[in-house]
Length: 569
Image 1 (spheres, rainbow, N blue to C red):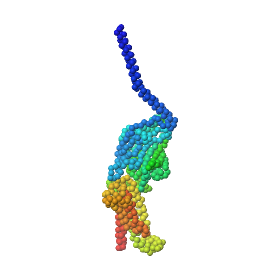
Image 2 (tube, rainbow, N blue to C red):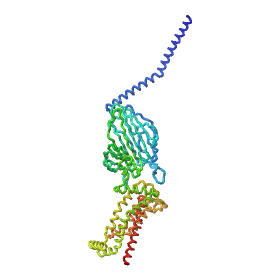
Image 3 (cartoon, rainbow, N blue to C red):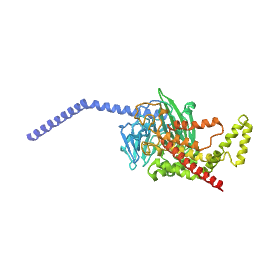
Image 4 (cartoon, rainbow, N blue to C red):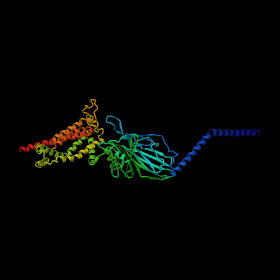
């Protein structure tokens, strides 16, 4: 019994000790941790209340600053690595402003690759717009979540961004083997209210002065409703905003060799706005499209796909995209001019000739020779007529001396001489006029085609798209003298001028003395003009002149021999 009581006493002691220790633990926990937990609970309650208030304010359309901020992620750099392009894309803002062309350098004698957007001082981006201004949308400060950071043709990148108020945005970016990015934008409404949104595409160029364009179009461009639109920078500044509506087509900003352009879905309708914004020391020219607005109901998802071209204006590549992606007249980003029906076939001919002979310079010579053969009958007729006119020069001079003071009688006498000798005075000019469209079309092709850029010839000609660098007056730079641009005359321009002079000597002189003096000045004037033009053009013109001289010489000799034979008989 005593033992039992002793056990019970021990149990009561243990029980009291247990409760005492428990109380101490509870008091200590509340003292050290209880306040923190209470504060966290209070903060969570405040956040919940703020979230409810924020959603209510958005639903009611009140323009109050949202208390809940969108989920922001760590800024990451996405590397672009495709067969022909590379570059970087930041997960913050997602602007395309660093796309490098692997096959093109800034100069023929360096290894610095062309960065299209940086060199054009522009960027491209795809974004959203809402009819309700209080809707939180991703902008240039938004940091997106990235699934991985390497964009390749076999590895697209997916980015997501949650506005924290019912809209989840997703952007899937793909790149092909050439110059096109495919951008698929998706938005899902997980909120309780419908939202009216529209997709927006923008290309923006910022520059301190209006870019010059000599002999080619340079600036905002687009193809809307089966019509090409080339908008001058000055027109945008004067009109402030130019607007077009279209279904399908394409739009962007073009330079001589490079292009940044958006290609919407060809069955979609959209509006395009060309505008400018003056900054402190520069001007931003903006080409922006807005798709038709759509209503996004709760639990609904919307998707739209655009393609973005950032690259070189290669005719074969452009035609390939035109065929595969069904892009209407995408080749018109190249400024073929009014002779499109001639310039495009000639561009292909020059490109194939280059591939055939392995050198663009020799390709130009080959095409020039083929054109001369094609136009041989016309040129032959022209030169024979010119030879007859030249044979009449002594008789013409005699008539000019006889009727020096009577222009009416002189005209009648000259007409009678033409009739008697059976010569058509425009017979030598008409065939030449028929050749000019082809010759000017080839001239245009050689001036604007990227196939000419950094293409070497022989000797000191390392780039057919720039002027002949070997200055005759400084002996190719041996004399350290800085000359004005118009005095930097290369060897090929001199050869071209000399060939023109020979042609003049072989042709009949104009009847009017003042016209004759002007014609004598033409080779000198053309020499100075061609000295500043791409050497490929000068080589083409010089070789064309030499072929014409050879043809004219052969015809003259043939006519002289025929005349001698007829006189012997």
